[in-house]
Length: 170
Image 1: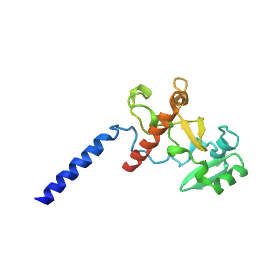
Image 2: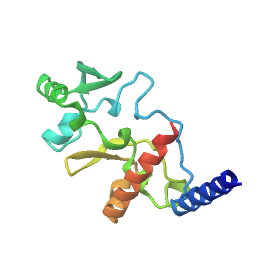
Image 3: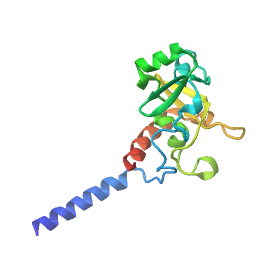
Image 4: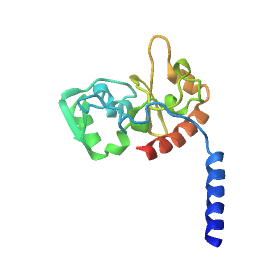
């Protein structure tokens, strides 16, 4: 009887804790951790160090290729490649290179009412926040960086929490 009572109490507690968490269905949860193409190239070939060094998005070259954890990165020059090799984690995009707003948006407020989740980016639309690189979706109709900035603090908090949740499922 005591064992049954403990099980019921455990179920009640876990159900209550779960109910207090944000109940969100996420889009594209089963995509890889990193936003890469079919050839394992990150950032559509853009140089991840250039965002930090010159605050700009610039395509790298396969001439300056470096593979890190099975993912290919292109760089503009040997100097940028060396910076990355010295400290790769400093130059990696947050959220695996997926759209930061896609993760941080309020449920149902995304592109065509889609739920938050892992969405593609335009590598030319970015922001450095606290020495971390965030990328955003942007085309002729939508600029998610502009929407992100309208409530950056809340979007960033939601995105960080959701990224942890999404990646527990993978």
